[in-house]
Length: 177
Image (tube, rainbow, N blue to C red; front, top):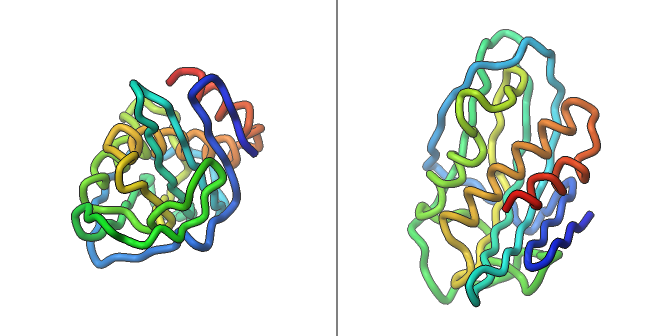
């Protein structure tokens, strides 16, 4: 599913295997969980936003795993080495040229901030929401792009967990950019 609104574009899909990555490093936080029982679910979002002559790009995907024994939702964002250049861009993209798979350290905190939202954000059920798909553009990705992508991903997962239409929810988020 692709949303286009002016210079703002977003794509939602269930997976992007070429964006899979893992790392020994991660940043985490917790938020109070909703009282609802969750189910395992996965989503991937990608964004492209024309902004001041430059196009911001980011791709994020995560798996939510419920934990009915917990009272919190844990958010985990694994990351790699700092941003480098000359990397192979072989991660699939629905919104442009291929991206580089993985998440550099440079974007991990912004991703976590967008994904977890603030304490007043719509809570998710108890469990772990772990990012395990990411793609970046060496020149077009930024902290701002990954914060927006994290926020979009949280909204899409929230919609899926509540049997809402993720495209309509994503459209509302993209309109607010």
